[in-house]
Length: 178
Image 1 (tube, rainbow, N blue to C red):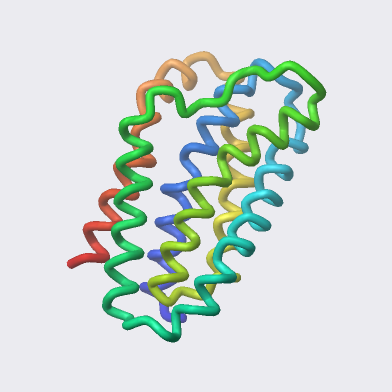
Image 2 (cartoon, one colour):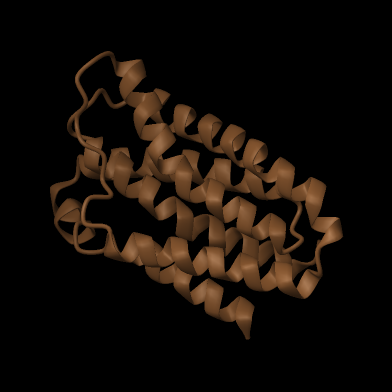
């Protein structure tokens, strides 16, 4: 893997992790602030990415690489557009135990990463490396979101940028098509 491929994976990871940042941020004042939520989000991201990428790894050798690259870019574009038009992409307080809340939020933030992992796997990136990087960025961004939610001035500014993850994914899709 060369430097530009790693940069593309990291940029994509940051883009799909922005929703996890805002999830951590949204619940930072509502649920217990611990490391359980970031760990749960990271583990679910890793598991879901690996499970979803497995069929792609098995069949991609039989499909033309140019077609796969275009399909991968289209998937990123679709995820970006969905993130941009989503009016309610922040998790809310759920009734029930703290662990159930962590799992629900972790699953919600892992969905974008899973689709993006499939997209990058289709484009011939190593699925395990992508899943590990996505998982690590989700861990960090959920944790950071929780911590920054406690800072009122930062909270006022950050609430205006929940569209940024979708915009980054759209830009990455366009770059991949060029």
